[in-house]
Every structure is written in structure tokens, then in C-alpha cells.
Image (cartoon, rainbow, N blue to C red; front, side, top):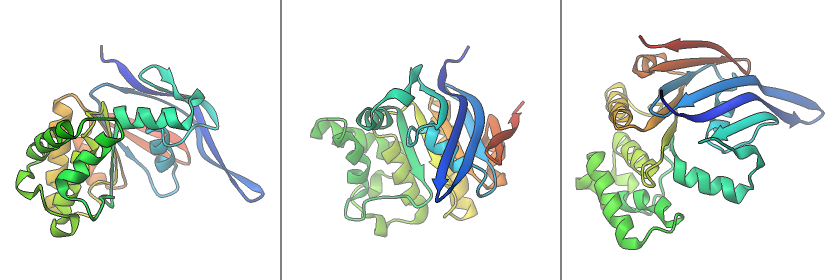
Length: 229
């Protein structure tokens, strides 16, 4: 039986907007197992981005508990949360968020600095990751010298730099054409086959067939769960 890596237990999230309170998430229960490939889908304002932020330890619950590898993160300081994020979770964003003045290799190596990895080891690991994402020939190129698909592969490589257990991807194909988006999804599937847990947040229904499990969120609640047979 697969190990539970992330658990949301009766999680609520409220935001204060002036004199009113917005209930973004309303009592979500969710278990994510090691090696899962999950797609979270829902319309704008459904609460899926809020759920993503809480899964990724970027935000805490107003009520309820969030567990990462069995540890309740609700009681941790921000510095402790940052360490957990750096070690256990790799983030991939729609807008890539690469540092424009750093090369592909330097962008991938950057997160390792914050984990205290030696410089020689950082370069060695970054070169291995570039090989895995098929960008060794672009190692010394800056982001503005790369195509959209290449930039997203660098972003995925950066997410892999500290060998995380979980990759959390927010609309990772949103800025890509159909062919390039398909190549990125193929890379995610390869990573998942190697044991990495993939959680992908999107509004693109074309990506649903890649998932082992699809969560549909509406009005701050999980409305539907579909498992691939």
C-alpha cells in the first residue's frame, strides 16, 4: 500500500476582505499518496489555487490540519516551512519564473544554494538534470535565448534540483502551444514513472487523461473525484 505523503484534514481557508470574510476553501479532506499523478481542475475562483498553496506549504489553513510526510505543518514557523518546501516540494509555474540573468544551468543550480549544497556538487547535479530534461546543449543559454518549451523544461529542472518527493505545477502548459505542451506532459509522466509525485493544477480539460486521479473543485469544495481505470 502506497504511503500518504500529503493529507488535508477538514481544511478551511478564509480571507478577510474589508468588512467581509471570503470562504475560499470549505472543509476539504484529501490524501495524496507517494507516486500519485493528480490533476486538480476547476473554474477561476473555485479555490483550486488556494488548495494548491496549502498543499505546497505556501499557505496555512484557517481551520483544520495539513500534514506533510506525517508532520503537521500548521504549527511550524515560516523558516521551518521554507526548509520543508525547499527539500520536499518542487514548484513549476505557468510564467516559468526563471532568473533572466542566469543561464539554464545556473537557474537549475540556484535552489541548491539555499540547501547548503557544495558548489561542485551543485554543478554536477544541475548538469545531470539538464541531461534528464534534454537541454544539455543549452546549458549556457539565458532564458531569453530559449524557446517557451525550453524555458519550461529549465523550470522543471529547477524544481527537481533538490530531488523533491513532490512536483507541484500550476498551469505548466498554459503559455505553450499544443505540441510543446504535449512534450512537457510527457516529461511529467516520465518523472512520475521514476517515483515522483505529480500534482498539476489546470483549467485545461485536455490534460485530464494524463492523471491517475482528477479532483474537480467548485465553490471551495471537492465536487468530484475521478480515478483512471
